[in-house]
Length: 414
Image 1: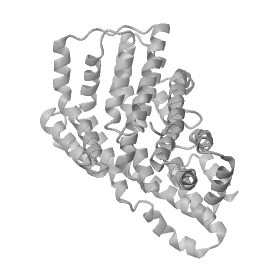
Image 2 (image 1 turned 30 degrees about the vertical axis):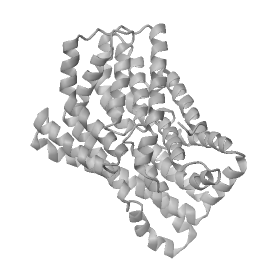
Image 3 (image 1 turned 90 degrees about the vertical axis):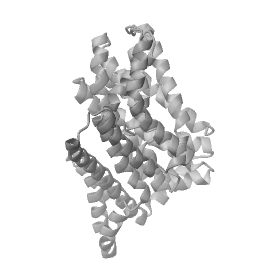
Image 4 (image 1 turned 60 degrees about the vertical axis):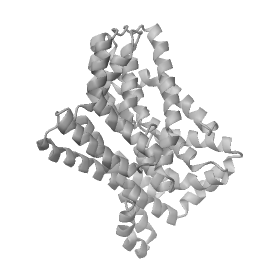
């Protein structure tokens, strides 16, 4: 009860989630009166980020900054536009294809949503799309970031559950494709009912020009995915090499990046990395305190008793994760949930890679669902629309995403 009161009170005071987790841990330790726990607090806080796998996080954050600064995102969007023929709702399909391309670079829903909202929503409005629909399509496409490699959620899950991050990246490819196809189907149905404008046809010269301009930028996500899938590089190494390639492309090929831009870029990446890593450390600290109180074991026993089969467990887990995702951001939720559910999943013979995929996708959907929905409110802020309007426009896309999630949960072969 003390922990719940602390969490609730700090949330109501709008304290940042990382600070909420750290302070709640301190409150719980003080409530036990155990001085040994208090003495061990600094050590446990540092132990939360003492992992080689976490090195991939700042590298991919830096990669996203480099790609944005180099103009690579804009070129990839232009390539996507040239690829789509004269079909109704063509620019909506372009937005989704561009999201797939950016997902292989950014790995973050909020970062991808920010880039795409600024880049393609104004173009969709000029073409005649209602702003609500344009923003909803872009927001739905941003859900691909946690599914397609490199995904920050996969990196964190791999570190916590001690499973190969590269295998998680591979496992995300088919579910990512299924979710993309589901979104394409939603756009096609809506394009007939609204109706959306027809995209202008692109001639051969325009397509060749777009391909040539985007080729250096396209090399970066292709290298990252191919190097991980073939075993040429670990995710951490791929992030580092990909960042070097992005810097070379921005400075020497596109020449939209200058040496004077680098200090500010490194500072932004450092601040972003520090915020995420402190959140990881604080969540691990709270997990350690809760484990000392034997709470995960009690929750695990209750969840196991309520599940009679692997399928029942996966359905129950999805319901639980949906509820958690509506009130907690994905990263702290992931850090708190994984240590509890992993042992139960092992009892039912569920593969940890399959489990990680389901947990990561499910919690990421919470970014676009009220009442917390960080990505939902980011989209509202960037587009000057109410979160309720965007949520209404997102309904068919979220339904398609949940249908995909249920399919993946029940058929692990996918």
